[in-house]
Image (cartoon, rainbow, N blue to C red; front, side):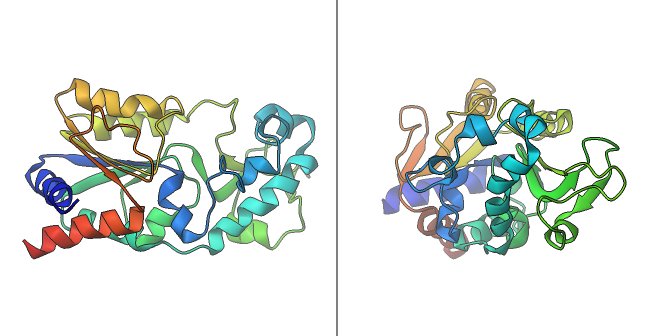
Length: 244
């Protein structure tokens, strides 16, 4: 394992443009269960009844019973793995993070260039007039929160299952991946499209992959595949880079 950590650190040091792709597994050690895990969100709320735009449009108060649980995400704190990734950006090595998470923990840890592929719980919009409200304002409202103008129930700016990835996020991702020669994949099964195509895209342009997962899924194509906790593996890589 030490050799794998050293190889990963060396690859990052030598990379011309390194980017990261993260998923739910990077936040579990911050107290946020994977939505698909045995005790995750979808074990209590049917994703087709609560996790689609259609469900929200049909019965927003019902969907807000699930969304109230998501509001607790803002109280979680980033872990050592998030902080290690932010450190890589400070060192000028990691050029940006594409995250499938909606918890904002990368930004709390200090990362500045974060593309929120599936949106975030940081803001909400009125389906009628489009007025936006920040999370702090929404938390002070009675649930389900209503637009003060239209009186319609606010929708979080997250991507529901039947919604498209926001065009701006796609454009920013395309720009970030252009010329990337190294992709650090952490805490994701790479099973959800279209983010699942990102590792293949980096490989197709001659880049290499480093994977950190409790149960690696890219072992056949990643140059380094680390099976372990995100906090431990990510911290060990950065420690190795600063020591050598």
